[in-house]
Image (cartoon, rainbow, N blue to C red; front, side, top):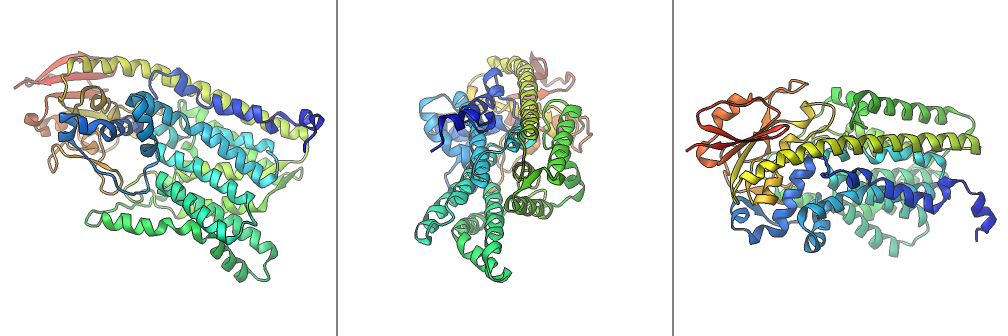
Length: 503
């Protein structure tokens, strides 16, 4: 047992109460902002509402089709089933998303302790990667899967001698849990466990081939989701899976991994963390864990090999970078307490400033979004709304999510909006209204232009292509007033203009 005196002498980063405080603090933007300003979150939340309440609405049951199936993208959807029974959709979705950072904190703590026996100060350098570009964008299923994957990895580290009789069923079930949350999170888990196990076996095996064979045998239970991936993709046969590989984007992603509120600050954070990590890795006053270094190398290889779009999912490769960064900073630990204190305070300071910046930015944009959402006071139940906006990644550095905001009309007015995905195999829900017609799904929202001058139609071109007889309103964001004889402006908010279609 650890004596009271030893416990008192332990640095703060080894104390349980400190990590509980960090877990609570990591939810700050969700606590202070009226709306979680995560672009994809709005569209996800509308899907949860249809999932839980669509059958009771004559409008939603007409506008959308929802069918359960076993796919590798169900993380928060499954969490929302019980939460949706006790809370309205929007508070339930906020709570589900807000639980992901604390769960990831737990995962970082568990992996650090599993690898080192105690928590090194470098674990605090991993904390700024709680709030990354992909999480803020709203990839909640994936990040829930990452948090679960870290916990499964930590359990693997702690049970090296577990017999196959127990190892196989336990980790087969846990691998399925991570895969169900998100297939890419399971892929990351497979790489991490595989590299950890291979490095461990190389220390004791007679030959590299024997180490590789033992690694394959021990990690077999983690491969169970492969069976379900084949069934999943077979069920999507007849639809095109989109793949793309872009070396130029791979050079850009490391600079935007912490994209949040301010371009200079966010890129500077990446530079500071990279510099501290490089300093620790080359310093003779630190110790390194070769198993975690091998794990980081495996994730780096996966990042380089991964297409930018996989299974119709964009940012497939970028999502690996936060996990790679967490593992890399955990792979090294200072030998002396003074150096450890510097590292710990640096990580804590970066986390604190980022949480404050994100909280302020979210609060400001949420106030404006709430004012825009007052447009729904003008909209009757069951209305059909066509939304138009420049997509988030073509706009400002801050993620504003105009192309998704109209999804809240589905929850608040049982409306149809063209803001849901219609990707076979990737989602459980598909728009039924306007099926096979223009303005059926999310891609029809997108306008060209923005600060990065993305390709796409102008607002005039989109309005000309709109099937007016299929809609009651047009909701246009961040565009000048449209003066057309068949449009009547009924609301003007800070960024959005709602128009009724004259018959």
